[in-house]
Length: 232
Ligand SMILES: Nc1ncnc2c1ncn2[C@@H]1O[C@H](COP(=O)(O)OP(=O)(O)OP(=O)(O)O)[C@@H](O)[C@H]1O
Image: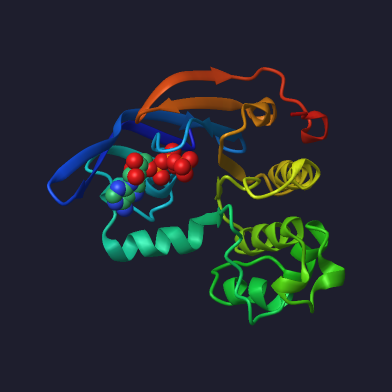
């Protein structure tokens, strides 16, 4: 088992009000699989992903990734874990506006332990010919390709995607999903992805549905379909 989450609990306190955002979440994913987390806004999906990725801490429970007990790591070790093992892709790309496409990717590869080649990655995401452009000269779908290149160049064990197609139209979304599927296949990268869109679950090995901080449904897809065939 590559990801093991057990009885994960997390609360946030604002002023005098404490809200339990994760109420005992269990989740597993095997190496090389694609997992999808579905659920309405505010149900705790990002909180769950951020704890798995070492951006946030839980109150109690277990997160284990590739046999590392993430929930036990010191702050220093958690930073190393995040830098060395995890690639993040967000809804709004978060590219550095003053850097070109190539430079945005190199910023990450320069601080990575065993990076892949920037040119090779840009080639695989279909952005090699736009290496010298700036983010504002790209479409949303192209910017997301660059942000995927930036996440993958460090050769992460786990790619965490928070609504990667949330800001894109249907065609651009499908291209991004095809790209994620290709990365999963070519690099063997395990992918865990949050989405509002239940059609996307057809390309996942495992699907988790979250509601109000709890997993209300989990399923395993015996037959995954190619992202090419996803419609909504
Ligand atoms: N840092 C924080 N401080 C206080 N409350 C927070 C914090 N982060 C998240 N929350 C609250 O926790 C709940 C779950 O948020 P989370 O972002 O995990 O949900 P989500 O399912 O990812 O939602 P969305 O689909 O809208 O992104 C929300 O009610 C949110 O307001």
